[in-house]
Length: 290
Image 1 (cartoon, rainbow, N blue to C red):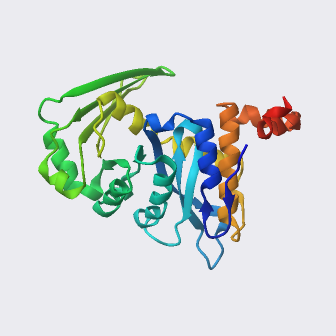
Image 2 (cartoon, one colour):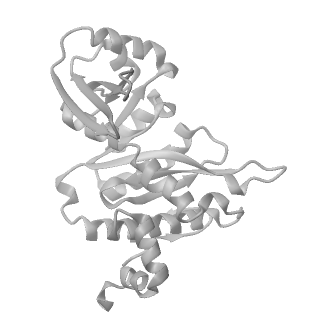
């Protein structure tokens, strides 16, 4: 097993690259789907100092944080530009980065494309005019749609995703290389018959089917559920009071989670197993021990 090397300034990528290529030897034949998001380290706050924060990129296939950067008081869309060269180094020109609405801007999306990647970003009220154009576009028949129905504890969750490739000119002018316009409707029917409906819109620089768009957009929150939430509940990252070396500790946490999730989808179960039998943890690091 090869671990990333870190210091207080920069997370170095060569060991990470070796690990990714070892685990995914055919990576060049498909698109790497990544998610980017920020995280605040609440425990690092002091009376006279705000909490530290960093931006990270999560590789879904390996449940691995492949790169991260300290935000340093910058806007998220500015800070994450620092990792685009890293993503090109790791994945060449075959990667797609999903982001939340804070990143839906021309400068960042242009740099993602220039770095050899693609993006999928939502259209919300911070891009109100573009969202309105999306609403108008989807008032006409769509080209491709997919429906997913799920039963959850007596509730019925229905998701419908539609796409258009005839993207309005106003959207194409505002964001670079937009090829797919996406509409996602999420309807929940409660046990008492009450229904709630939420409709969201997004764009991507990659040409996607409705099924691909649904899977990629829905999967974005893996960075929250399988990384950020797990860091706080399993590794207690939020409780840490450190302010020095925090970048290194966060990098180590990302590696630990990648190893644990590679062994089991249930983090709680594998952590309990390691507590009872520490040799299990050692075998995760050194598989040759059997």
